[in-house]
Length: 317
Image (cartoon, rainbow, N blue to C red; front, side, top):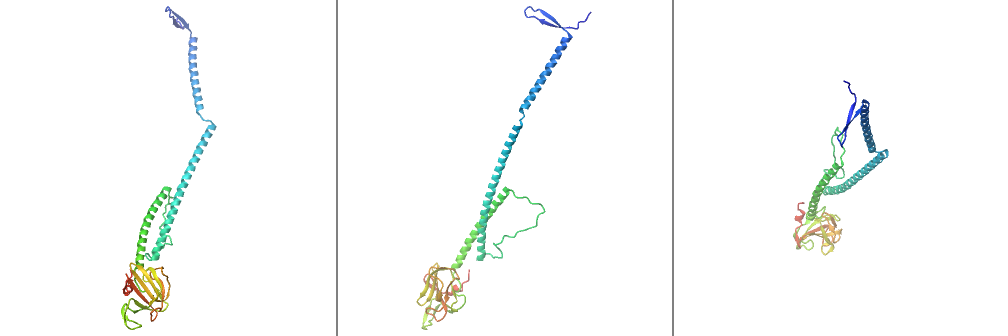
């Protein structure tokens, strides 16, 4: 039996169902296979080219890259400029606060200096003209610089501390001023810097008539021209010549208290002057009804004379 190497392709008709066989040789089959492979390769190549084209289409050009970098650099410059402005504003704000703190410290120093001058604190203990002494061993490790938030926090703490010290010093100043005012108004001491008691308060023999007469003050003898001082702060209500007293200085100390300093050689104040305790108001003399240089010293409370000796011997406050 003879073999047949041909392959038949059968076609069937639609109308009568007849079929027809078409023989295919080996060459035709090989051609069809080659054609199919070629089509597959062509399709794959076409797909590869399309993918490469799309990828190349997505890559930016050189000019686009330059423009993008320029935009980014411009944005960075803008950011740096904003940071610089913000930092400068913080520095300016800190500078203003430091200036305010310096001013407040100067006021505190001035107030402290007043306490030194008033004797409330000793100048050996506090010297407000020099910075506070500080020190200590140096650490072997390198220190770190403070950051802006740390500096701000330090300034906040310093301001709170200064506020507290200002309140305390203001209160101390009020107490000191009141204490000083009370001391100024407190009558105490002798109206002279040198001399002796030559005639006491009360009844005595009149030096001119020899009769018993009331002496409403004390006489303190001394050197002519020596100082006559007030024994308390007040307002001068009379400064001039008065019958019997000669040259007289009268000082009102408030609360009904008045002192008189008579027979002065020279008067150093005028009516209406405000005088401090220990201030020189006249010089010792022998004007008026007098036998020699002395000061006639009177203390009057609510219009009635009091013994000046109790104020002369009074302990200081």
